[in-house]
Structures are given as structure tokens and as C-alpha cells.
Image (tube, rainbow, N blue to C red):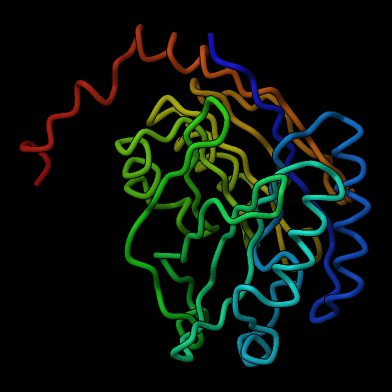
Length: 258
């Protein structure tokens, strides 16, 4: 039997461009998550800077390692939990990436994902990624995607075919909220995996943090407008049972998909 993993998803209103204020909010939420036994905390897209206007991103983007990633590594160590978060990354060649970084509880990098499907004005600053990778965490295999990727079934399917049992999603969802929930549930049910999504709150954003099970059921969700953590236990045996009954990935017929 596989060991369950307690996952927490954050939702909060960020102060755009105010890294100190946002780190303070995240630290409070991480403390709450740790008290609840959360082992892996998921934070929104551009979690520490806030989802700012495109012209502000270059001034907030950082290399890895940099002060933001180092602060998040310290947070992981302080609270003894892994953390997945969105960050604008400046690469050595000067390219900017809309990135999701997963650090373990020692603050070490486990997985780095660059957003493949760029939304609208993100194209003015970000270079898109070109692949989806997985990483092992405890008894589970994890994958990541970001916001607009949620609308593309191929993203989650690519990860599931690589063995992902849990998808981590960071978002600044511009709406509608119903489509955030529908797409999150659909990506879970499409592939028989758990999907855990974290979002920004505020007047520009919609939807709440939530976790869906392999049947596409929402097993926990946040309350509209409230800074909080929602959490649930991810059971790898539940995924195995689902695929014994409905072996979706074995029944794929890729030669028929034109």
C-alpha cells in the first residue's frame, strides 16, 4: 500500500509587486498548513510578485537561485513541507519564463516547469516552455502546469502518460470561475489522477483553491474571498483502484487521433 500525501492549496489576495508583503502572507499560510499536517503546499501563479501587468514583470523576474527562490526554500525548511509556486524566472541568456518551481522540505529543487501555453499578454514577456516533466515525491509521481494550460487536455495527458498521479496547478484565473472548476475536474477525470489547484484572489481573478479526485469530484474547496489553505489526503491506492476498473491510459488509440 502506498503512503498518503497531505496536500494543501493556497488562495490569497496578493499585493502586486510587493514581495515583502506577499512573503508575509505566504508565511502565515504555510504556518497554518504545517499545523494541519500538510506535506506539500501549492501556491498560485507568480505567487510572490503577484500577477502583475506585463511591463512590470522584467523588474520582478529573478534567476534561480535568487532572493525569491531562496526565501521559499527557507520557508520549506522552516515549516518542514515541500512547496510548489509560480515565479517569473530570468534565465542566464536573458529570457523570461513563467515558471512553476517545486522544492522539497529541505528547500532542494525537485521540478521546474516553464508554462507552455501562454495567455494573451504573457506572450509580450515570456518565452514558452516546450515539455512537461514529472518527479517522484514519496510514493507519488507529480507533474505541474500553469493556469491557461488547464484548458488544454494534452498538458495533463502528457504528464499522465509519463506516470503522473497528481497534477499541481498554479493559477491567476481571469474567469469564469465555473470554467476553472470544470477544467480542473476534467483534467482529473480525463486521466484518472488527482489535481490540486491554487489561485490568486482579488477583483481581477476568479475561482477558488480546490482539489479533485480521479473521478473528477471536488474533495475540498476554498471559500470565495477568504485567504486560506484547503487540504486533502492524496491516496496512491485510490489511483490504482481507479485504473484497475477504468484503465484509461491502456485503452488509448493514438493512431486514430488525427
